[in-house]
Each structure stands twice: as structure tokens, then as C-alpha cells.
Image (tube, rainbow, N blue to C red; front, side, top):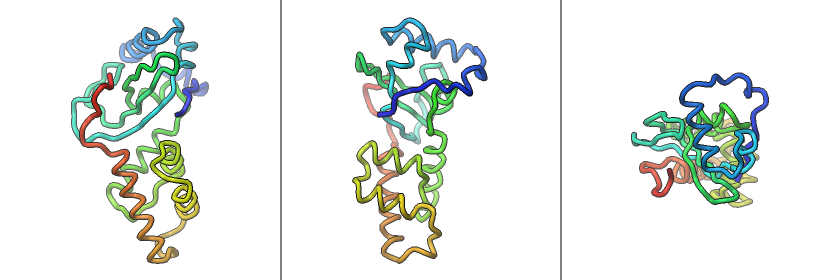
Length: 175
């Protein structure tokens, strides 16, 4: 679980678009706090996944999003669906790197994940401690420098990542 932190560098960069106003209103409505800056502190990013089907919506109103972040209110347990683009507008997150690595390994299982995806997989219990240590040790190495056994393990772990985070249908019960 990643606590949401306001991205101070981008805080003044976002425009008060209709979509962002809707996102702020829904987030505040689902929070105990009544200001956006205070409400953010009640939320944690609990999951990320990529879906291949259309029909998923961000709370901002954007339709047919595929890179999905689930945020959960730590006080009430309410879950909300936020698109990858929106969460980056107001939070310090590595979700862009996460989704870029997921796309890369889905095209070629021999490619390496990046630190953001490896760390998130470990935090989500997709990787155990040994798998996390192994992948953290080899992710920057070229495939030619890996033994056949190491390369096979890397491919297996990539398939494990894709199974965990590349979903064909949206989980039920997420707003």
C-alpha cells in the first residue's frame, strides 16, 4: 500500500479542467476531510493493473481507460478507480514507469522489468523475497550475460508479473 503524497512539483502545473474538478469533488465526497489537500492524506494506492477491454472509467469522467490505479480510503475502506494520467496530476507516484515496463515485457517476455514494477510486485506479494532479490540483481543486465537458467527464471517472473497486473476483465466492486 502506497500512501498518496501530493506532488509538489506538479501541484501548480495542473489546470482546473472540468475533469480534474470532478475528480477532486468525488475524492472529497468520499473522504472525511473537506479540503482536497487534507483528503489526499486519507487515501493510499492499493493496486495497479492494465486491462485490455474498454468500459473502465476514471472518477474524473474519462472513459475507456486501460491503465488503472485503485486508491483506497484508509479510514473508510472505500475504493475508487483513478486513471494513470490523473493520479500523476496530484500524486508523487511511479505508475508511469510501472505501466511502461508492463507494456515492454508484454511485447517481449525476455525484456526486463524496471525497479518500479519489481518493487510494486514485491509490495503486492506477487514476488517473494527471493524473487525480489533475484530480479533486483539482474534487471539491468543484458540477456547475453545471463545464464540460460537465469534467463528462464526471468521469463517465468515476467509471466508472473503479466498474470498479476495485466487483466482482461475489470474486477467487480470497484467504482
